[in-house]
Amino acid sequence: MYRPNLIKQAFHDSRRFLAKNWLSVIPVIQIAITGSQGKTNTTQIVYRLLSKIRPTISTDIDLDTIYNVPITALKIMPWTKYAVFELGIDRKEEMDLHLQIVKPRVAIVTGISPVHTDQEHLGSLANLIREKRKLVESIPGNGVTILNGDDRIVREMASASKAPIVYYGLGKNNHIRAEDIKNDLKGVEFSIKIAGENSFTIKTRLIGSQHTFNIMAAYAVYRYLGYTDLQYFKETVEAIKPLTGRMSLEKGPDQTNILDDSLRANPASTAFGLKTLSEIKYPDGRKIAVLCEMGELEKPVDEHKKIGRLIAGLNIDYLISVGSLQRFTADQAIRSGMDKNRVYAAANVIECAKILKKIIKKNDLLYFKGSRLKHIERVLMILRGDEVRCPLTSCPAYIHCSKCPRLRIDN
Image 1 (cartoon, one colour):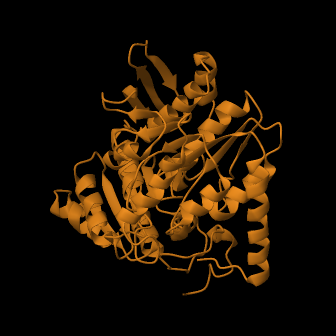
Image 2 (cartoon, rainbow, N blue to C red):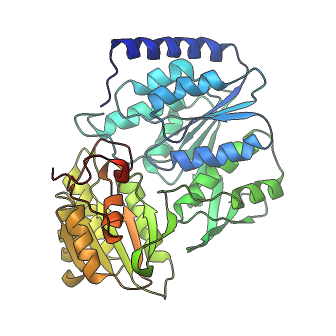
């Protein structure tokens, strides 16, 4: 964990003090988004929708929330109408720090997965839920709380809200529902249905059914703020491109295609990504899933085994698991019925690249799932002929490995 020195800490504390006081006198409508997955994409969709209507500020994609919130607050001007805050947490009491500055009228909780629940972070799933629920508790009665109604844990947070609730999801007990979902590598297409109203179809460039949840949450905000122009909503969403490393389609080596989902990895997002890979019709080649370890979990072995059981029942041709925890995924996939000749366990990215060199063919679709700290980009670098000698399964550096001075050093 990054710990600033005394001078930097004093600077951060001063900035937080200024941000808190500045935001307290600005009549901006604040929208806060939390959850274990989908936060960044939901934040970006809400921002894109509102920024074309009125002056809008949003948190940066790449900054740690603890610094991102005060920086964003200080960018807000008296004429800013909307401020969209992504509120990530990985420590106890961290949501309290965010809410010292942010006073949202609108809250979105995208879903709960046991990420950051290891002893070095939140310590348990119960602590994670407690922290996320603080956002719901903070919303005033004249605001709105927007919850993923398909997630049992999130739905139960409704009891903590003073504000009206809007549920979204696939289930019929939600206010906003997604129906007739179609997935392919050009994007996801689906219909949004609201009780008592005509449904309407959304075509997007975003790949994966998980984006239906992000779009529905954004639509709930759009409606709450009084906007009704469906054509504008549809055109804006349809123009949004996938963020790099969040289900983005890239050209791979040897005329393969890469579905890059390597910026974040937790049980829920991994399951969504694998299901999307399975659902996509891909007659041109085979589907190969390359999975790195999921970190910061309360029960890491159990969660990796769950992914193994899942993948065995999906339409995926090969599994390559990278890292010691991923061996549990590979073993469970075989135990659950996946052909053992199509499952590989690699100790590190260097072994993974060697396996891929042997099995990939022209037009194969490779799904890469990891997190930024697993640096799965090294696999692609090796396949493209770069010298990579670093075998670390996890590294705290946030820079791309191609820029790392230790790339060609045995660790």
